[in-house]
Length: 466
Image (cartoon, rainbow, N blue to C red):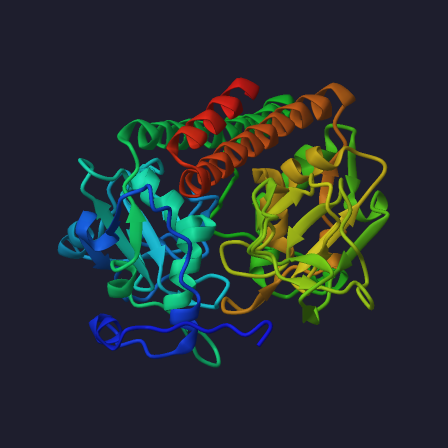
């Protein structure tokens, strides 16, 4: 019958499978394998396979950074880790990540399961990893970790992972023991080394981007003469009742002297203005009605410091009913979350998007949006955000009307242009890294489809265009 998927499997072959897979999806979705390549089970090429630690986490930076499933993008582990965990010395040694460890996400949504990232030890403190991740270490005489990462991330590796996954109502799981049974082509070490080089170049490009973002904030503080400023923190202070009535706030936190000092220093520049006076749009999104089509949705996890994540992992929704649609040049602000509230980034992508109900969209024609985002992320912006947030420690919010109260320094054009150029340079480095890693992944697919010589020629072409 036309369109019918059918295959015949040997009974012994079914029994030989570690999980005794008898479901039809597993046997009808076997991926293509190049008969000219030599394939070996992944497990035969590993020196270690280890589950992460199951432990309580915090967003206060207490303990050591801990990787979770959503902190891997473009086949590299992120450099900003949002959570930490307090572990003892034995646990730190047991679960501490080493440079070039491969992290594999074994459970979550169907979309996330199988996500793989290479760890590059760059954050200064040896990180650990959570229990829904698995650490793989490879025998580098046969297979480099960069190649394993690229293979598991490419369409052939993902097909292998997805056919081994098991879906329930709320989550999808894949048994790491089954991942070890995946047949991987053992490519020539010369090609694998080229993949390693691509990962290294991309890694350094991303580090350069991070340095440039820090440089942009330093440019702002230097222009204000506040590069070495330490906010005052007296042991006691008082405030007038009239000020409390005017602000509608009765908590002592709101009246800390350092907040008044920030506003005083900004006002002394002669270029201070309340954000509400210069914003054309200051609006939160709404909870999306997710669908298989429409615009990508930006949530609070996608809004990083001076960077918005936008890739195939963003869920989609139709724009009908959305109070605002994100355009290139808008500034996005995270409106909730301990440790992440108030993070801001200019949206530099060409693709329009939708904000969810925890993301506020700022649009202005009066100042440079990239400079505005850097200001909000700077010490001056973050102290004011800290003042205006509302709620308890477990559920805090930053609403659009609070953002409107932030005192902003409308810096001279040369300062804004300098900040803008530096952040744009960082954005271009990020794009360069993503392009190199996508090319590395594609080269693995070409090696499977057309052979290793074709993959090498493709990488030559990519490098020639750099």
